[in-house]
Length: 102
Image (tube, rainbow, N blue to C red; front, side):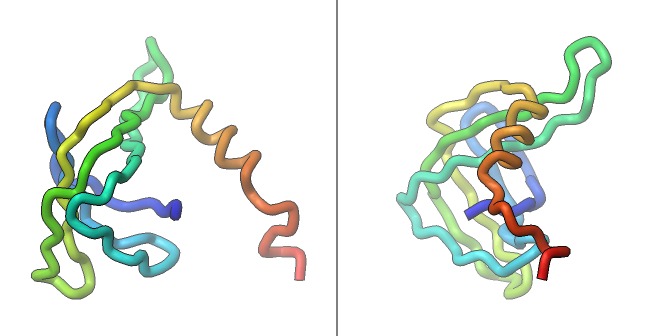
């Protein structure tokens, strides 16, 4: 599933995400599940806008706050990619009918 979320904390070996989708409620992952997350980085005029492509394993799910649980993951793989390439790939996978077509 794809949805924009908020990154709470990031390091070389881990990532903490506020698990609240902007458009819909997302099911919580289970401990041990492998996730792929892309973190949007601020634009740099010399390099353009980039994102960090992370793949990791869920290590903890904290449901302290019902409206916004937190998911912690250990990062197994991290790569810097062009943000615009990611947008083009997402646009090509969108359905032909859009929300204005009813």
